[in-house]
Length: 375
Image 1: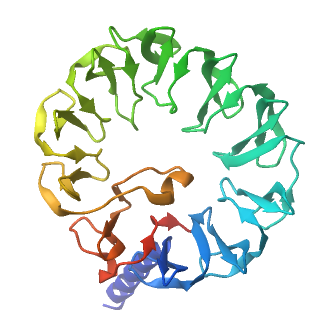
Image 2: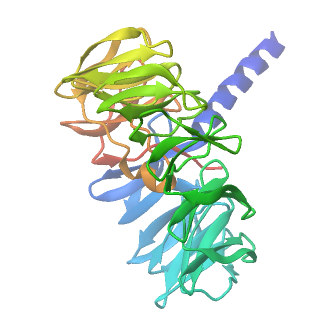
Image 3: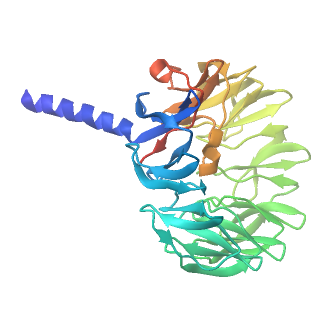
């Protein structure tokens, strides 16, 4: 009996700790604080301005200066900076005395090569610009790639698109070209299925080192997550192709979005529904707008937004507004569920709904940003 009791207490404690591993930035009375996934304030509203947690620290403002706090609300890096960016890969950019530089999570300065401009770290690397060329540095401030390219875009899945002499390719985090810079345009995201690209007037998919032209296409969008289908346009109609550039679902739709969890939103006229990977309409068109699925739920809109499950059942009524908020700055653009909660807005303010539509802690806030890990 004692063993069972100890086990139950342990499970409850583990559950509580798991809630404590994510905090959300909220505002009340024009002040910022942080709540856990029980809806409890773990850091009371007290800051004039603040940002979401990233890499276990959150930027906060005091007396018009910025520093960083930990999950207990303690100043780990004192507020002494004029501006700060998010921590990523254990490094953050800070502005002091009109000069940007990098700091570690201990607050110590990281030396970097002389540059015309520095950029935020992402996925373990950061860009730096010198003489109108872009290179890469590591978290130790040492050069990984000398300034070589005209442009480098954000790393996604360990790869980034690069521009050289008006043509685009893709590199990995070592700076190695994994897709030659020979394309008129190329997609933003590397996936196992391939990358969307354009070469001259031809649109297609780069997969396993080969550019697979999509017959008749005049635009192509990238793969999403682990989906094996991307969407493309032909003659003002949208369909879906595989990594070989073959039409798997013929272009018959006026609008479409990516496949996620085997379903994709599509529209003809003013109504949206969902098809499966065989092209069958499994959720009939009946919405003014529809977003991709996340965690088995998708936002759908009449006058306002609600959520359906994968059977098409309206689980949460269409009476809210949704947006990715400031999460896109940290590389997250989901407008739906993230780790079991969806961020929504009502006439009463911002709050979080679970998958049954229950409001977290039965409370609305002046503003609320998505939950982030404090690890």
